[in-house]
Image (cartoon, rainbow, N blue to C red; front, side):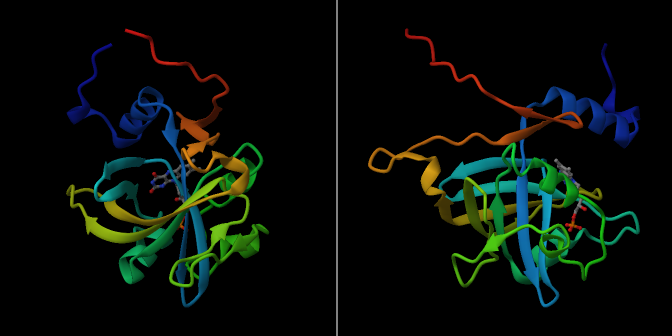
Length: 195
Ligand SMILES: Cc1cc2nc3c(=O)[nH]c(=O)nc-3n(C[C@H](O)[C@H](O)[C@H](O)COP(=O)(O)O)c2cc1C
């Protein structure tokens, strides 16, 4: 198969890209507004740089063409807390992808426990193995409806149970990834070949 993307519908491009470029990590993003908290998953998400420490997340629009709540909040107050998803929290994460009115707090609606660790950032989802406390750096205009945001990592939280050795910074993090429309858990880590 050789497919010309210029003439392909957006939904079909997404279907193909999301099955080829795998696995994609899931950023379970908590933002805040005067209405309370907002939580939603995003898998057009990737690390960009370690200096500055930055990630990129691409966020689209709702079916009524208004920006998704996470995009609106990030552009309004420049702060978010990116949490990770485990096998245990996968069902709750999936629920938070439901399109809801701006005023609705998904953590309250779906009974997701949160914990505020830093006063200047939204709280973490209590069961997350790690969290990135991020500030907005830059918005990239691709000329389309999806808006990539570059976010700077200001602080990293790691749950004590995921720290193997604090001195050598060895961690054991097993998160859920997205593969096409499905999810993946990896259970096999291999050493690099010895040259
Ligand atoms: C695993 C998963 C990954 C997703 N990734 C993205 C993404 O990268 N970009 C996006 O705009 N929507 C993505 N979505 C859809 C959003 O989560 C969904 O539109 C959500 O309602 C947005 O919430 P908000 O309006 O509260 O920000 C994803 C959904 C799921 C389940």
